[in-house]
Length: 165
Image 1 (cartoon, rainbow, N blue to C red):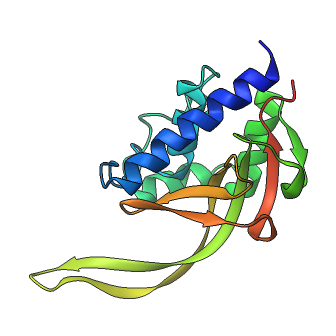
Image 2 (image 1 turned 45 degrees about the horizontal axis):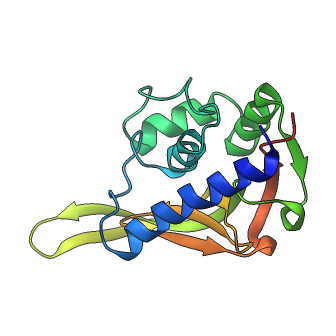
Image 3 (image 1 turned 90 degrees about the horizontal axis):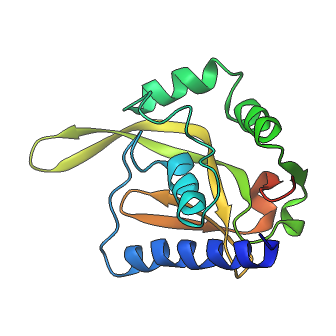
């Protein structure tokens, strides 16, 4: 199939996910269901591409479970490089990535535990690397809580052309 058509499908499917967030209808972030890697993979599947997360679906249900799998593969960056090799994706500079391409971003996140009627209490910060997908306007998207974050190219550690077979 023509790469232009696939890129258009990726744009449409990503926009559908963004629209759900804007309308307040998106499913909340949940490890093993709607985390950063599965969210991006779901966009790929809806656009008619193979599921890059198929080997990991159903294998974890918590942050600790995900990190055990990731740590067993040398960390998130190594895991992504192994996945890219398996899927025959080519690494590209973030600014050369196109709609639907995948990347990695490193950010500090708040670690929280749930407590009584006053909601969650922050118990610390952790630096984590997570998966993002390139949007049609050139920004990068990744799910958080009940929404998503957007990142510029300068924040992307590495990027992969998902149609470079």
